[in-house]
Length: 427
Image 1 (cartoon, rainbow, N blue to C red):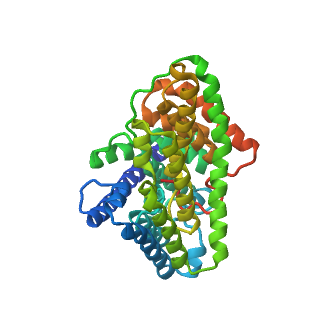
Image 2: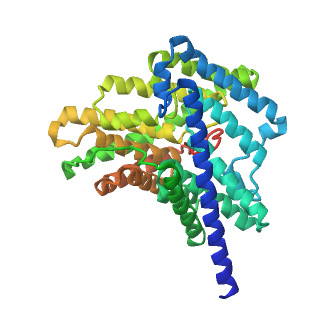
């Protein structure tokens, strides 16, 4: 075998090992969350929303605040001032760094994220999963003493595996890293990323027995005359997603002006979530279970609007206070709620001439995500892998492309270049 071919084969083997490491890191983080929730509520398989509903009112308020305080204390006392200021996320290690991801910084931040998540913070858990998976790729590159370029690639492979496992979407996980992190869809990197994502996802399925992330009923499209509605929804999501990101930035600036110690700031953010959860416990967590309910049931539009507003405020409070976590899944929630309300309005105006609101909720998820990340191809593939419904692809392409165009036209930053996004994905 020629030397170059042997080199490529070895690189693909290391990519596969990075994928295995990403799957193991994702399973470990999920298991720890499940164990913590079991210790809190004593029920197997309950999520954060069920846990919030089971708690008395005073605990529902106190739990996120105390969790935020604990998460802040972890950051305050386990990291030095220089380590707290330093960026340890994998994106920097892949694009401009040496491919070395700080193990201490990553683990401490993931511990802080864990405390925020299990106490009800309105955060995505996928961010820490991807960060840990990328750390595994970095450690693999350091142990084998790979050159800088290949070490960076292994970090990217770990991230692709973590993203694939978090959303049961190996192709979207690959495109996430290629489109957002590397900003290039080139075959020399795409091959290793695909191998890492697919192998990681398959191993994750074996260990976790994972089902599709959203159980969506068959999507029925009524008529091609609905295309103006899909176009309008894409334009609407393209304009609203930057507003959501601006709200996150305003929250960051507001908490920063308070000039309080980090643990107190995180406790205040948790307190806001706790107070909102007195009225709507659905704001606990990343919003995954609520999106699942939205896609399965018939919610009144007033309730969807209330949940949309409450989730936007609670996520802003959690992220703005400095809690470590992602906004990827909360972004899907926002898109689903906007799409559901748009679909309800269309159904009310045109009756049986339009598809069910669930169809618009699915399209809204994709369009909102495409605008927030400015990665339309990843958003299209992500929603397709979630639904496994080929009929959704054509209208999804239209909605996502237009949402991306609007966000670029107004000059909006992406969620990964807007303020401090701690580990995206983000779950």
